[in-house]
Image 1 (tube, rainbow, N blue to C red):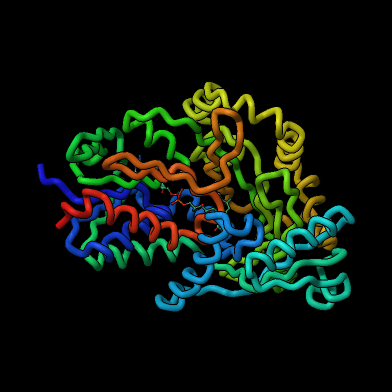
Image 2: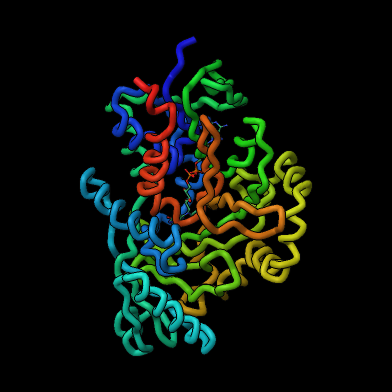
Length: 404
Ligand SMILES: Cc1cc2nc3c(=O)[nH]c(=O)nc-3n(C[C@H](O)[C@H](O)[C@H](O)COP(=O)(O)OP(=O)(O)OC[C@H]3O[C@@H](n4cnc5c(N)ncnc54)[C@H](O)[C@@H]3O)c2cc1C
């Protein structure tokens, strides 16, 4: 059996970014990108808000903050170089209560510390800029933008293929065995052997480790992000993206009004515990996913911490009125009939055995494997520097010395 130099599992934006940059860095290496679905970007990458984040939320100096800032610039540059449509429309983080106004001030100072191009708007300035949005004030983050990440993913894969990389779609990896000099993969298309494996499997990240015989010390818990599309007469309701001021104790950003690159506006996503990692219709249940989740001790430690929020999210998911109440805080003209159905996304949220949500990017390495275990938002924005970081590490691995 021929031994290839590298295999990358996962045709989401992280896997595509790694494969594309790896082939460019080691042109003589044989590199294969393996995706189980017929299409690339079939999961998180194709079911997100399409926001190019600027990085205001992340602690200055953290890896997440640095990769987001670099990723913001790299994403715009990639789109410019490859003719991909984007819009640097900016974002407003709107405070609607006195508590949020205090939190807004702290967030603004964090943005300044991180060197972001942002400004504080008074109530009057907010009204002048966005007459249909109501709030006590806002932070304007100018470098936030929108794009379709599926297009970026497709272009990275096309560049990879043009450089001689092999893209295998509709090919699921079913077993992994790391040996002294190779990694053996069983796939739905047969067996293959590679010198180094990079797994970027999103919601299946913990299972990739287990397939390779490594017991993960975390589990992926799926959190659904449900959206509505606003009725077309509201396509011009806002010029910028409108976000609430996040609660620092909660991991997700809150329901926001997002202009999409096709001209429509979505509202969402919420964050509802999911019972199927890849089941998009509401109330989807996958018995294996539920069994594993309930059997993971960290799940039972996580639940009590977010019980109140979790119940509220379930209620708002089941009843449109609750959802509507959240967005009417900053856009009072919205009515229930304005919220039209839209596809949901499912976040891969890594949770530790102690029940802590893992917020940072998490990468595990062995002699011949690199596993991306946690690539939460803003990993679509940060995919280019994440890929570069992984490739830089790989260039120091034995596989890179043996390649070609
Ligand atoms: C609702 C929502 C909104 C978000 N909004 C934003 C945003 O606005 N901006 C932003 O920057 N980020 C956002 N994110 C986060 C971002 O989408 C993800 O961080 C990013 O897409 C992760 O990419 P990935 O390649 O790691 O995972 P994925 O895109 O999920 O790709 C993983 C791939 O691995 C494949 N795979 C899994 N198992 C196997 C196997 N056994 N064999 C072969 N292939 C396999 C899967 O089929 C999948 O295609 C959002 C996420 C969600 C869910």
